[in-house]
Image (tube, rainbow, N blue to C red):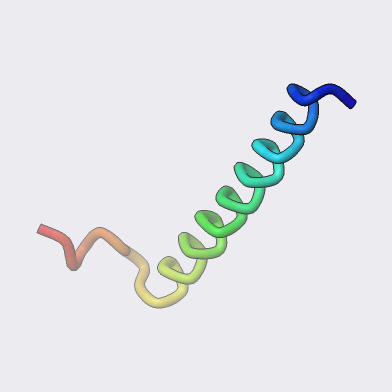
Length: 41
């Protein structure tokens, strides 16, 4: 593997983990309240 390939694999893994965290956080917020943006101004 080239250095670029390793960097791409690491970037893909990081973005995948970030995406999972965002989705799980969104689902968690949806469960707590039907409108998560209702509390914000």
